[in-house]
Image 1 (cartoon, helix red, strand yellow):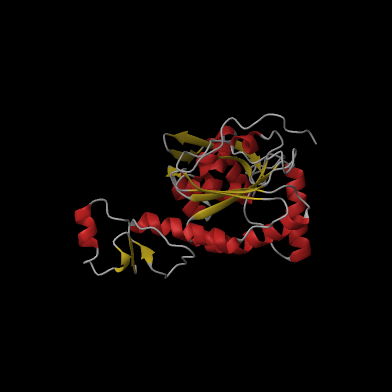
Image 2 (cartoon, each protein chain N blue to C red):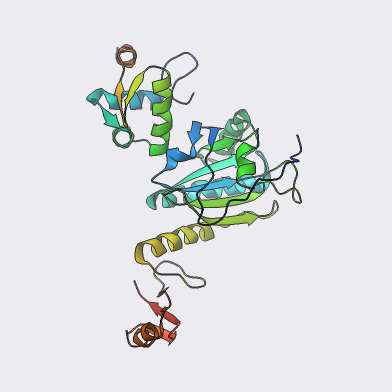
Length: 216
Length: 77
């Protein structure tokens, strides 16, 4: 397989628009803009027919119904061909009974991989590492996760991040360490001394004026 | 092509989208609801059906073309 010599022009960053693309997938030609209005998890895997990736695909398929409840679509990517992707997802279904319901980009040209900084030559010069881009309904990048080739992703954490981001958007709050739905959320810190004095009298659970939590 | 097979016939999802357009000018969102397909699939599919001359785009909405209606009639007979 051809080595990637070029460097990504600039890596996507949080809070910025996700790089646009038009790509051949197992569900036909898809553009990023086709997902507008939905949240999107764009994720890359090193290669089809590999063991860790297979466990991840089964796990992504398992959380797909939960993601759909949250208005989130899934889109996979590797530098394999559409034929390889089709053969692999059919093999996964045949051997494990798990149908892969989401599309997979066949990024043979590495156009999307490079735009999203998915190839890390220190890990592999020819394969994408395990990236996760959580993109909101306005197509803004909200979270980026990178996992090495040898470590499969944690689906519970991906779901937790989606829940945290959507809770933040809906309620204008932040979420503390190890937060999960139902836990108390962090009230944004006051910006003035007056607000700080008022904050401690507002009935929140406060450690001090800068760290107050409330139930939703 | 995801909606049109190499033999020129629409796939199951393509047929569902064409059928959804029978009711008249529709947005991608309306087609997705009627066809029971994810919106991203419908946006991509309508692009293909339009390029194949089976649907016409009018602004943000789509309608069945005469070629699309004819093909749909063939499929239902």
